[in-house]
Amino acid sequence: MANRDNPSGFQPVAMLDGSEIPVRRFPVDGDTAVAIYKYDLVIAEADGHVIAQNTGGANENACLGSVVGLYDSNGVPVGAPNSLVSEKYLPASTAGFVDVALALPHQAIFKAQANASVLETARFAGAPHAVTAGVAATGISRHEVGTVTTGQEFLIIIDKEDVPGNDWGTDVDLLVTFGQSFWSPTVVGVAI
Image: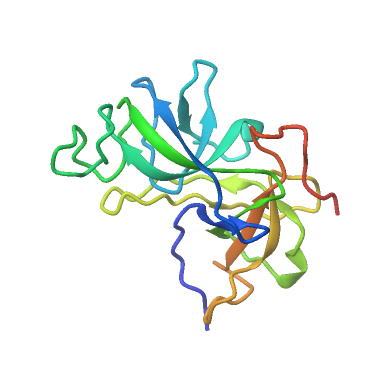
């Protein structure tokens, strides 16, 4: 049976020891060029704010983690009745806040769909992330795991998600950890 093509960003699973991934709130300023969706990867800006990591393979050592909550500039959840933002995401050029599940290298595990065929032999291989704009109706990211390589990469594939109907191949949901991020930019993935 074929896997369903349904990219949904980088969803936090757990730390390697089974504990919860730490989450921190960061500000987003009004000069963001792209919208931010739930489960988008975000990067640190030099001005102390965060923005969506809107190009795969770029600024990977500045990646803070995956967005798990979005708020307007008053701290009200986006889309809530009293929010300044009626959408379920944070539109481009809109100030606010995001809760981020931290991309702690070699510790935090996230689930994300592959944008190409991935076979079991890719376990422990590296991969970049691939960017597609999120879905406005749901407010959910469409970031994915990019094409698997044999070199050092931003993401390290741990395994596939162990659920019925998720088979190695096209559109497989993978469990990944970060080989590098803002929290340890000099750490890299396994070279195979």
